[in-house]
Image (cartoon, rainbow, N blue to C red; front, side, top):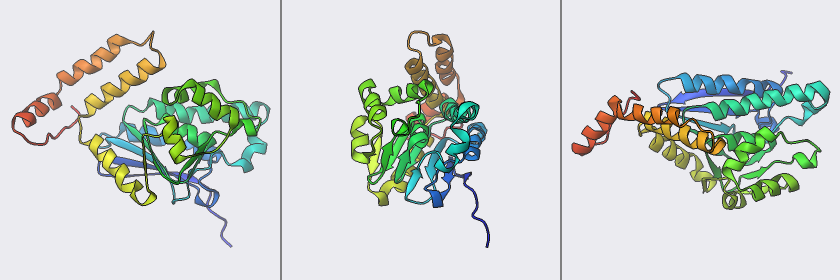
Length: 264
């Protein structure tokens, strides 16, 4: 009998969109240690590909984005030095998503739990099925939640809502998550893929330099409002005006046609 294939992170490109898929479907796409470790390389490769305009991360199948960390590995990874090392692997994955210069979208079907919920929060936008559900159940497992991971949560939800989520460890249905500010959009399951692609292509059609400048400014001003490097952010804005895409956008407007942006 063939042994089941361990979970993996897969990537493929469709036009201007890079799909990054969490694939461990028999275990509701739970993350193994190796899967967490693979996240940075997939996001870095997508960010470096000049043909990619938008990155969508999702789970294989329709039952789960991801149930979070594979609990079967907890015995090896949740004590002493091993726990700290495992946290660092998790943190590297989240940092890789946050550091991505291109727009990122989490498309969520079904369960989105624990570390996977944090991964979705680290994306720029979250689009979910009405049947999706979300939780960070660290308090139910007596796990300390890394303060570095609370910072992205605070960029998405109010402090009181983040406290509620962490204090209770409860599971929130999609309509509750939408009301909390966790979701940008929520759709019936049969519309999720089409609507996510519509959003991604809408973004991909716009000027990449403008989007990168906007993302850099929002992220910097959210993370460090008092100490953000405004000169560096100004330089990104000025680069938009100096670009060929700015000339193309102006010409297209005057000619009453859709612009074709190249990111230069």
